[in-house]
Amino acid sequence: MAEREDKNNYRNPSQDVFKGLWEAKVVIAIAFIAVFVRLSYTNEQPTTVPTAQLVTTSEVANYPDELIGKTVTVRSRPLQRVGLSSFTVSDRRFFGGEPILVVNASGRPFDLPSDRENIIQVTGEVRNLAIPQIERQYNLSLQDQYYRDYINKPVIIARDIRFV
Image (cartoon, rainbow, N blue to C red; front, side, top):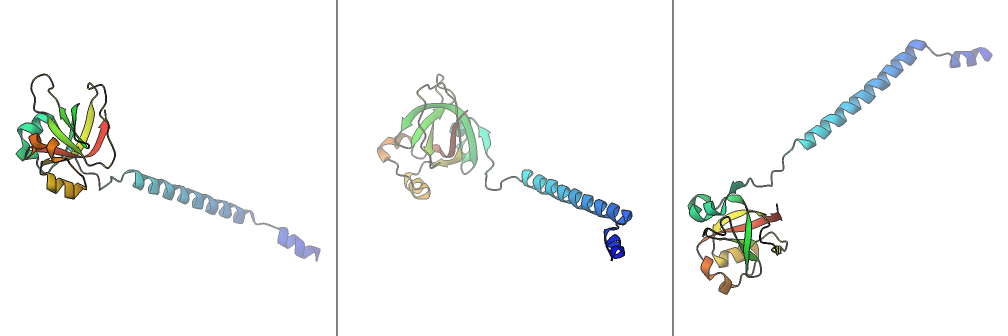
């Protein structure tokens, strides 16, 4: 009986080495898989973010036909509030540049800064101001009396507004 216990306790050194190598291969393989999975997630670009062309308010005012229907980003100074959900921006406050109306369709309220020297960034689609279509499409309520000066002029329907 003692002989039998000795056989069960006897280990072959080559089996231990192979078992150790096998376990090391498994650990290394799992590490490689984890690295590849992680890299595949960090290199993906979101497909829902529209590409926006960086333009000036002067370009929107002077070349609206080239920008209508395109998503643009404007960095500018806010000028004044128009209605409850809109405001104007302009690059040339002191040199008579035409202000561009920005309609906030982001779903988040945006308060104009008290210091008009702050720069804001607006990203959205350039459109001609047609109040009924914009109200329907973006579920907004625009008060006509505030927008008379902007009818059929280029506006930016903002999906993102932030301070720069």
